[in-house]
Image (tube, rainbow, N blue to C red; front, side, top):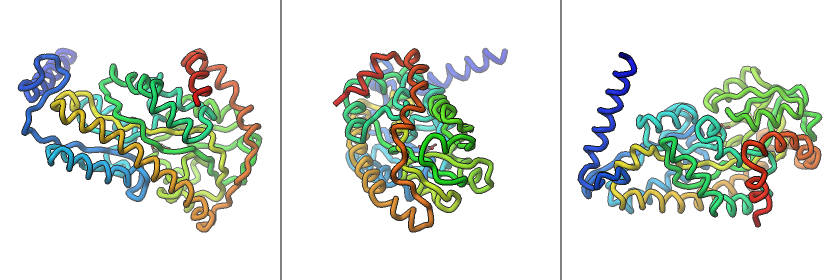
Length: 338
Ligand code: EAX
């Protein structure tokens, strides 16, 4: 009985969505809506209103609303107001939320193929990452979202992730031994820290500041713009510039919502998301350049010259394990990309 009800509800929902798009879909379900229909798209993210995500989304909002002549209205919800990243992605799949700007961290629960980008030390620098993600490999990875009710519009950016903790300065993997560390809900990151003797705890970003404040965990890892805008300097004493993972973000729209929109608005969404990526990456670069000094001024002790080779050696077993998941050819294609 319960299953029938769910099936019935799903059928009603589908019929309702199809109805609102009937005028222009031509029955293929690819595009819907009509010329004068308006769409309000809520975009959720977990970072602060002073973050790189928020600053870039303001620009995105202005461009979208201008280019659509007001047929699309964007509402931005920061600070996890709509939930953690995994929750928000699930809401998109159910059609309960329109958009999310999320790190790839939690993606292993939705499209594991995408998390190849989460391998530690996979990308040499920002240019290398952008070259891979903006090319064929990046598009193929975004396409992996399609079967999961998600449309990946463009690769945005969170940045290179660095390690903070309250135990002491971390110079090499030996200093990670015994540290309890929050990680994203990402098996690869957890495996990497276990290889160093760390004790990883997967946790939504929305719980992280309180967990650090209460000493539930010793440390965490995040890009400089996140560490600064989320004020982790108030609850963390030591920062080590490990840059152990390049963390892209993805601007995602619910497939149900996307397919209810007419093609011209779909195109505006895609093109503006790609332009927004360029703007957002520039914001990240500026923040990465400026905020390390700010964090030192806020009292964090910063280790600038970590033993990078030792970290890279320590995480090699993770490559051996995940070569079977992603395929060595894909990993090589990414690492060898100019
Ligand atoms: O995507 O969870 C994290 O550490 C992420 O950096 C954050 O949610 C931004």
